[in-house]
Image (cartoon, rainbow, N blue to C red; front, side, top):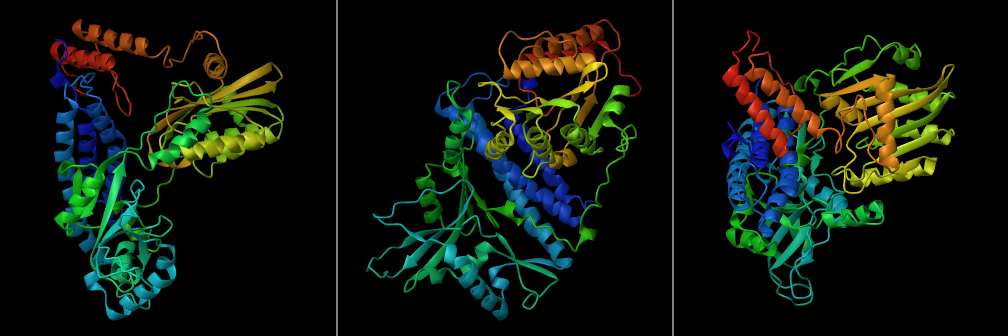
Length: 564
């Protein structure tokens, strides 16, 4: 039976389903309270990217009248309608969880977020002092008049729209203004112990600004002040025929801040005439308006409470990789056996140890590595710089198009170049997503290669959070294949023949289809058949169809085994 559209899950709608499952963690009372708060805020962060990339992409398809290419056959206009309905429901529930569950439970634990109506006289005096000395000097109110058109608003930045009565110093009766909240200001401010009424008390920057908004407009009377935030298309578009990828990306990074608006968030008390005015400014409709009962920038609520370990998960301790002993030569260990690292249960330390030893070992001649994400203060980058400064041949293939890490990766590339490394950006039109490191060492028997192949990133934070595998090996066939991949990335010529590695775009797709089809044939013949696949997502239609047919064959032709 051939797969039908109903057999396919829509990628965007399933991402919303995933966010619902994350939100469920915020309601799980078996999870420590501040971890539940963290799950709630992660939903906001994930939804920001969802609108910036996924929803923006659907809107772009709709603008181009592109109804093709989706195996589920949901056209963009219908998909946007379903996304809006589901996202509104999810976000409404998210704020319900915040206000009705988490904030009351945090208050019982002595952690409170003050609302303006809860502020006492002493706290109001402190807020005035804080506003005067810490906030007002960096605020720039912008009047809305013929000489001051509606300002460009940065993606996901907090702003206030203010309604005013009276005349300004020039005699102008201007009744509206915009006040941007600079990103340099903290969004959550700790209330000093001398005026706090609970153990850990905080106030939002929005409350501080709102409480003292009149000071920005002397002689005029604010009659309304309301938060808003705009989410924009943040997907970078780079042409394949550019001359310099780094320069092109640097130019595009600034435009990301002002891409097409895809969502407007306001608070529930924002009057209709104001949010309709804002919708008009951004060419948005009611379906793209999200009225929220709380801070519009919920992600910025993330705060680490150092003195409350009882409200967090117990710190995770990595399992010891028995085969790895840092007191022994890591090269000798890898000559004896491969090491398979399973993150996050094992740390990234065995690989970091290998790279540091390679950087300082006089017998190591060359290190080649791909960089996708590595973190701001990366031991990996430091080791590569040390190796390059020490005279080793260091080649780094830095993927500049790692989404939302483009800027840091440009800085990493410059840092590596300054240290003396050869830095390349892969192949224009393709992402270098492979995680590979190759070390060439001179030994008694001649040159010996050592390699690390990973499914994650060379980022210690990611290695603590995501489930990934890393293989450290000196296997001649594997290291030869890794060498061929680097030759392919840095040089030119026909694709090489590989003995152990399947890699896209040349050697991965067809063998995967063949392997899946073989299990389908096994199932139809009544033989044992099983496919175990671990991926972030599958979007390639031929592969999806093959998997659907394989699952149908298993259901129709085989009986479940006891372990199933």
